[in-house]
Length: 64
Image (cartoon, rainbow, N blue to C red; front, top):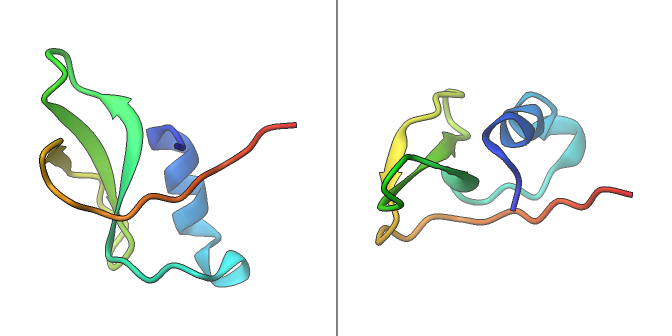
């Protein structure tokens, strides 16, 4: 799963990458305490905090 920063880069390049069907995607960047993590809103670019029990999309990334 991408970090908050990596997910924002995906958002900025979403037209070239394609395949984004969900409005919100999880990042791997958690808030202290572990119940919340950042999500990326692919409609407007915001990065709100989501409760980890919520269901949002996931986009895998890979580093070589």
